[in-house]
Image (cartoon, rainbow, N blue to C red; front, side):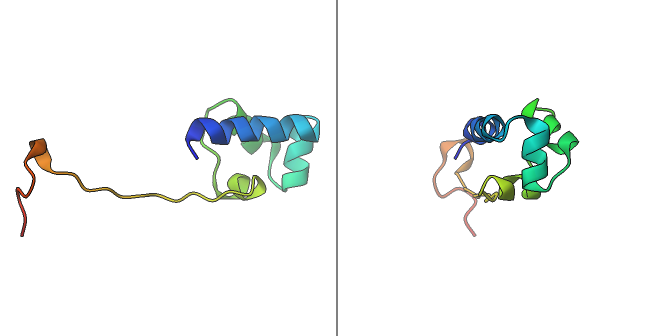
Length: 74
């Protein structure tokens, strides 16, 4: 799921709850945390992601430098 989809899900859940304060109460997080994420001031942290039924997973990829496959092996 891309960040834009996380924000869309957050906004949907806020609407369903009846507003940011109601969602914060249901989720067990502070209204300021919900507001900060809803306004894009910060990305939702672990507690807010959990309230959305999500968790953050980071994927690491390695690519060749300058398109030189095999350069720097060893």
